[in-house]
Length: 138
Image 1 (cartoon, rainbow, N blue to C red):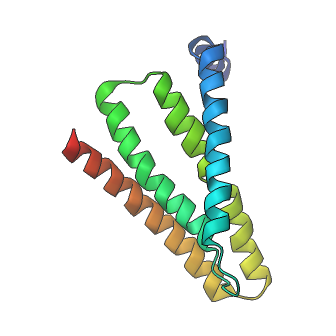
Image 2: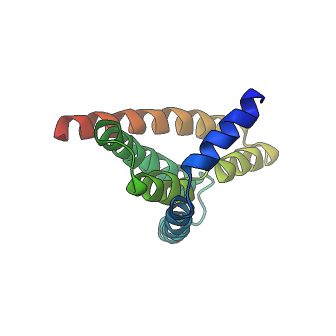
Image 3: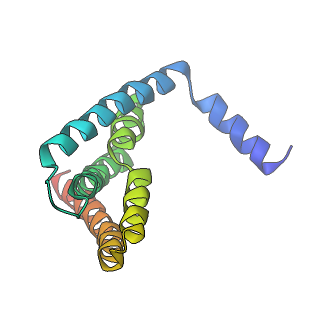
């Protein structure tokens, strides 16, 4: 048996119908939350993609806190709902990538670079902050 086949078999044995259901329910809720926030935050006339930037940074902050919690207390169905489901549906790497390329195609190279760099550093900082704050509270 290859390493890939062994890994897939191990994942398949661990994931149950209920895990997949929790991920799907959370993902739908997270996507709806992202859409709602993007409608509230949208600024007309601004070239900066604020909705996606704020979603990804706030998602990373919450992800850090949730990861710290589950790191201390173990994984359970709530992990699948919150981390893989809600935050997986809420945050969006693909939209970030499309918006970065769109800015570059519009010849807003500085803005594209600023958006890409600030997105990476802000999400990493937010993730570490969430992880640290949750660690202090537990």
